[in-house]
Length: 378
Image (cartoon, rainbow, N blue to C red; front, side, top):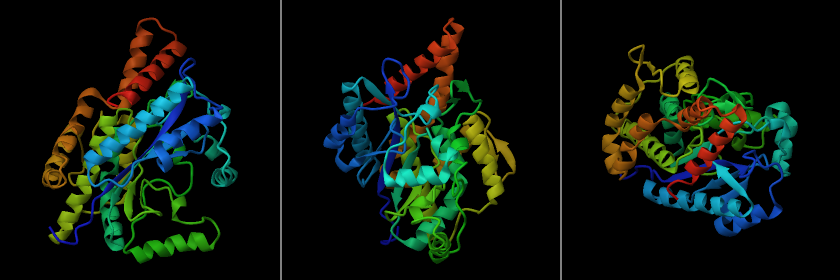
């Protein structure tokens, strides 16, 4: 392809919930030394989050998916070790099965203090975790053009990542309940569509000059040009409990972006559909994950997800070869076979209940599985 091809470097951020190994509840007051110990092992690649029961890690800028896999495994492993010293464990799930948001304490930082003050109850409920994937696209105009086209695929990625079926001890009936909480904040959901990077900057400038936001890092869309790096940042996905699912989805995402770039180099592009239609698929992914299919917007009908995924994998096959991630992309089909984290949580809960366990004990068993799955493959 062109010598000006984007770098397609990758960086992955994951947020974890910290649970007490004995009670399986979220830890309300983690030990003061925990973060210091984590920083000793991970350096600046670990940070505190809005709530004290959350912790975030971020890989370095990685040249390929294998490097990202290695760095992510190291970071997860370090958090598991540090937490274990204090009788705690991280779970890579976007909601906790039963802990109450009203009991959580927010981390005392100016940014978090400001957020909580501005958003009030909407912020206090944010006991949710996500996964953010950065893909290196150095050219500003290209980043906006690919963002406009990438919107179509966001529901597909969400459907494969669901890990938040429970909230406050209840089966919500949704595979990704997290987004119902996050969507209560302003500047969330699907991104706007822009004709140019300059137009995007003008919109951001209106909010900055009006004193409503400090900068573009306060834009929390499902997909955004990063305010800190020359990347396109995909934020729609729940955090994947299993490390190999994270890696597979990150690889697929990279390949979709390269496929869109490849089309552009041939004077082609992905058709742009109305936000209303993409939002319908977004809702279907939240509600059903991949169980009931998504709308193929070209055909105007709901199509089984395995058919859509086969088509998508065929579309990006050339790109998977070019980016050296054929194996990782092929493993995305394993998610359909064994289910997302949400499927596995619900299945485990139902089996416990069927064997006579109480609701409380069944939910604790779900947490035990999440602890084990989070540490798998490290």
